[in-house]
Image 1: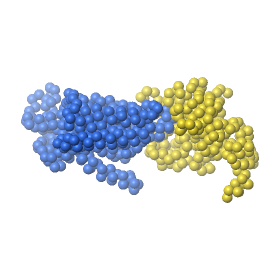
Image 2 (image 1 turned 120 degrees about the horizontal axis):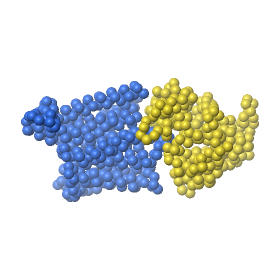
Image 3 (image 1 turned 90 degrees about the vertical axis):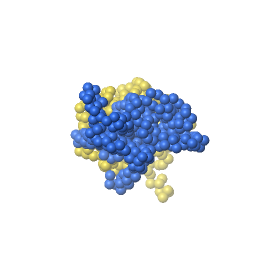
Image 4 (image 1 turned 90 degrees about the horizontal axis):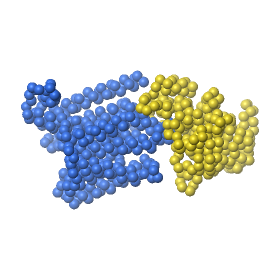
Length: 267
Length: 345
């Protein structure tokens, strides 16, 4: 497995003196599907933004394909890394198709506009995400699940090798959560796409990510398969609550539940 | 996509017709009674070769060729540039309340203009009065000051830029007020100039501003796609491959240049840059590839009509055109605002 991404000693502080990341070392190989887990404020999203290069002033080194991220131009980076943001309200009224077509910006040359290739790529991405039917609708008028699928279509159209996702399914209902993560998983399988995703839901992460990285206060607390990482001891240390871990009776994936006796006292 | 292109072409055709009509009105209407035939004859007589032998009364020629025509053209250029600058600032600040004077351009121009009028400081360049040169210097100086203050560790946050723009503007405006207190005898002259007017328009006003305006508008036009992506948010634009900081820097410079060139020839004409992009956006949508050309044309038409009103509402007094744009622009803007709040638009 070729190494796609290497992070060495990443430190980052939004306000000086308060390091949100306290020296992260992480290597991700081509074709991996990694889930980042951890409590609020543990630095998951910050790590993702450091990797994507939008946070200036991060200390340490991040190499992408053996070259420091800081030495790529934004356009070069966008051809390698696509980013699916958290679900959010949008303040613009572009059509879904226009938003997906913007994913092709990094592939445009000079002052030339989108070519037939770009339009084909956008269409294919929209068909894969089943968003083609409502391509003409303004992106602020479609449902939350549809809009997140448009964002994923844009990332697919970007034709990058590494997909970063920041809680792509937060605030979505269970059906849309499953649809979106199934879609990502199938892209991962069919295209060998490398995925690093932040998850707020431990069970979804356990089910979809092949490798889990558990973060606590800006450090990596555990790194490995779901069975290695999601132990009651680790979760007690990181989240501060007791949990039961067991096999799902349906497909054998791992399930985590807060232990009733731990929460009963708080009622 | 075809329907959109259709609506763009339709909007531009409508606006070009409106521009031609308002320019014609600007040449025909006024204290002296002149027909459209005279206007066309004067223009034709100026054409090389073809114009030979066309006779026009000297008085008519003088009014049209030396007063009204350059004035209408200047109004179009200034109105269009202010609207273009408004489009840029609203995109960069992602704030619908942003206007071309946001970075202290108007306050800097006022101080420069006041210094020139009251103290006789400054020098004139061919075609541009000493007041104009000083106003341009003042507004560009203010922009650099605001930008310098907001620049922290090599990065510029738009929030800091907005606040330092307001603070620097307040300071410069206070300085102008102080100057006016000391030089009361020339107060009216300065106030008139600050409120904006196109009465000094001559053909030789144009060479000093046209090249800069063309360059600025071309640069903005070539950045339309990036401006669209900026609407998705700074980080998303960066993730899609836009060099956000460089884009913003470039856009702020050319936007401020448009505003500074405009104030140097016409004083501070408010509201055009704020409301024209809004009105146009309601019709053509948020895409800058359509928004920029249509806003330029709409701004041109708007200011030609405002200037026509300014010189014909209460003759022989000429109202500063800045008052007219605010008097008519503000209520119309409020109307749009209320309509949108009710969910009609």
